[in-house]
Length: 47
Image (cartoon, rainbow, N blue to C red):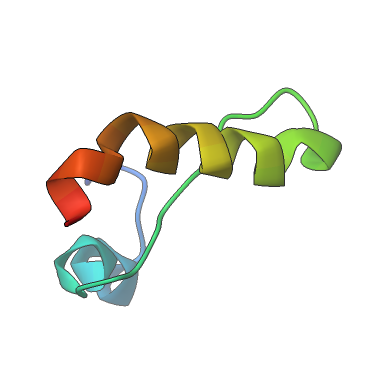
């Protein structure tokens, strides 16, 4: 997560265990699909 365009409290969100940060989907209707694809990509690391 880049720190140049983040409010001060938001910069600590990646440090919260179990907190998923996502963004950049080409439309809000794809947010859940993109989040699930990201989780699938790291699923083995989460075990």
